[in-house]
Image (tube, rainbow, N blue to C red; front, side):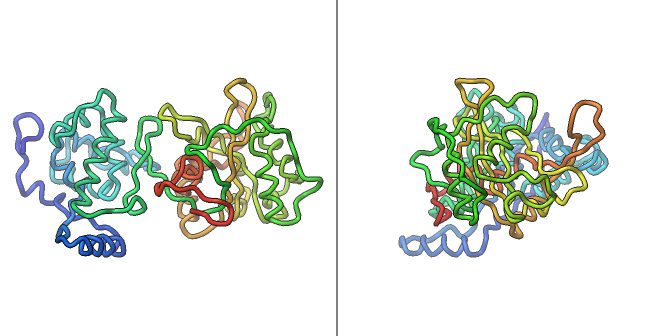
Length: 370
């Protein structure tokens, strides 16, 4: 195979990336069982799409990808400069980083690299990089599943947000049902807050149901005004304490969403969780996220689109440790710092699936999370 200008990669150099995909044992067993029931021999080995695609890339593309810094690493952590890596070492580094993440590899590639890879794989050319990424993901997914029938829950198809592929993790908490996916912007409805602070979680969620579609009015200069108004719709008493908002048990947070050019909902900014030094993790032990969007007819109004109740578990703990970060908070020149949650948290924690529909094509209701 030729890669780069006038140089062929040898089999010895390709060897480090010629691996077999490692699906979860339960998923692999189910796939083989289904193939056996269909009465035909299942594929005996599964291709790792990332390894296969790396083997088709030009040398310079492999070296460029190997030199990219991972999120949260320093310049020193990136290792030696691009030109100092031989092809085998660069290939091994790219595989180590993206071996189980086809979306990540395709998102990191330039349009030129995507076009070259599509040509190698016989994928029809597309004028824009997002379409190329989607088409190449489809080809890679087909390579990995072979002749086995794999359900979407095992091999979920990504959506395109901001030109990049995003896998939506399935919901892991409660949220309201929807007749359409992605959820439409709700019709306006009058405020109907409870007469007092809700006594039970069911009453709190019922108030969240009634808040969907309520217009929040002009925000003004106070960035937290919409969050305060949303909490008032739920009957939350503002105490300005370090513990969660509702009876010290549930933290209520708004998260800004908007329609992407692809038509899917996306989170538009990292929401603030707490001031630096405050117990942010305690606030996230149980969080009621209120997804709000701007109202198209007005540049100064917003509404609640949906809600999502998320409880702490080991998976959420891992995502929180990965995505919680601090940065300056307040007016220019302020020394205050706040803790924020990275936008990608909401794809991996299931919130996006509650807005767009999950990978299995099903919604959920309050009593039966998907």
